[in-house]
Image (tube, rainbow, N blue to C red):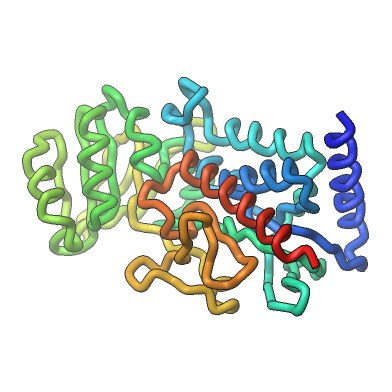
Length: 335
């Protein structure tokens, strides 16, 4: 196929240019983020024959650390990391360069945008797609990162079915996400503890609180902190140590820990560009075409207010939409 050959030759030239960091790269679209939104944007951008590159250090985003996924169409079940490998494979088959480094800065120019990566690489691009996601709030405990996907999770919606017939699951947090997570996991697990450090849950919606109170296999433990994760590198999480007020410590053997303490959109770059943020959620405001208020800048995935459903499928769809929007922008401004 002639078009495929031309497209691959163009992308290979871009990829080769990145081997020489002293050379400034010119692109049609730079995609920031190696998650579902970023890979989908890269796939569609390459197919639109745009000069495309993806930059990001965290392979796979939230999906890659989500453990087993049972709600992605076309796969009855698949590990999130493996799913992201499939996403990446499609992109690399089209010779899209993937730079294992984060975007440091973006500034507006007469012809588009001047971007810098943390490694000093300079890129001039006509458009930018921000798919940099969110930063999960963590407990900051030893082995928390190492055991993510091995007993430690951050997404109740993704992982609740994994607790089917399990004896004990622990959800940490006091807001809506934690309450919703406890209720959802309770449909699968025999027993769930909802643990929160405060004297009362942090303003969950009344209807959620009512449902929680009716859920018999959920125990709410207030004034409690998770202070230690116990297990092994091979088997992952096995026990959790709680500390209640007055230094009373208790250990529980558990089948899983769900941390639903919230997540914060990565807004340093959006703020530097003057991109509009949602007042309540701090998410990047986008329209139905994933456009921000800055011409030529698009955003997709968990960074945005585009959907309340923060899932792989919605991130991927938004990435595809943002690529189409970037393509149309380049056509409209080709001179």
